[in-house]
Amino acid sequence: MADFYQILGVSRDADADTLKRAYRKLARQYHPDVNKEPGAEDKFKEIGKAYEALADPETRARYDQFGEAGLGGAAGMPDMGDMGGFADLFETFFNGFGGQNPQGGRSQRRGPQQGDDLRYDLNVDFKDAIFGQQKEIKIPHLETCEICTGTGAKPGTGPKNCTTCGGTGQVRRATRTPFGNFTQVAECPSCNGVGQIIADPCTSCGGNGVKQVRKKLRINIPAGVDTGTKLRVSGEGNVGMRGGPPGDLYVFIKVKNDSKLKRDGVTIYSEIAVSYLQAILGDTVKITTVDGNVNLKIPSGTQPNTTLSLENKGVPRLGNPVARGNHEVLVKVKLPTRITDEERKLLEGLASQYSDKNINSSSGLFSKLFGKES
Image 1: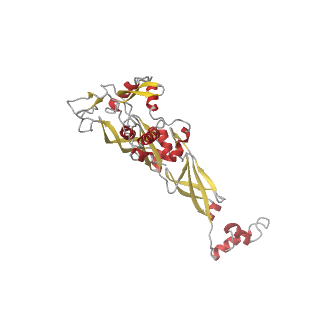
Image 2: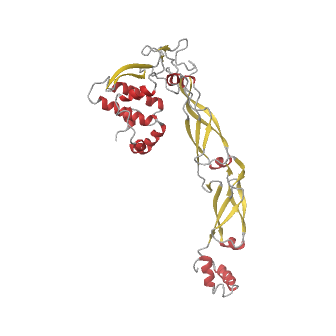
């Protein structure tokens, strides 16, 4: 299958503006009314199909993951590229023959535009995710050019009405169809529908009115975040075109693993190994928690794989840091593989204290304690 990105001649990480510029350039080059070479019309349809799939973020995400198979949800929908000249005709109908759609059409395109949202993936240390912190990040985003203040024109000059469309942002042409003659309305190729052109562009931003800069931000990471948590920073996305409001920044959290502690929601898990004597007699041992080292009491007679709980030593609940989960400790009992003669005598003496009803021989005691006789 053809690669939509290769068809448009852009990289896979191209932004929306780059896709749009590439599509317009190729569409003008291969439009059947302009290019009469064999195969030009098929190429024009192919370009339209590729742009239609990549222009919509949801459709593009499905294509990036599954290829054309991911666009199966659109099966049965007519391909605008396959409709040839009728695509422009339908656009004329839906735009009210004059580009004035119900949402404002032409004036909306020429006016301020909302800036794009941005995504930033942030790796956070295990304990920082539990207790929260402030973290400084640097993000590349679009800001209004300070030289031209967003006009795109060199200081002292300004935009001029496009001579191709007369400032309307649209061009019209009569089209003969089997249903009669219709007037097609299309976006002006000279000014890209803006209605104005920059004769003397700003040298700082190249006439775009915006430029990419790296900005430092301090992000407040609340206690209890986990991998997959999404933080929204209002107004820190790309600035809008033509004075439009900026988008937002979305910070996606990924928490690093810890070598000793595991986490599941608000619960912390760890393991501790004790000797068989500690398990039989009981003891107090130090263990590592997110709050540092604490004393854990091992009750006498603790069985292997017993779980002991430390209340309120887990993860704070996101949005309610006062409430915390628990720390669950799995107790592993270490059994010796060899014992000394003295240890054997002591254990055999202990075995003799048991009634034959519980343990019939010292061999049985060894089997219970060590899994086999030593």
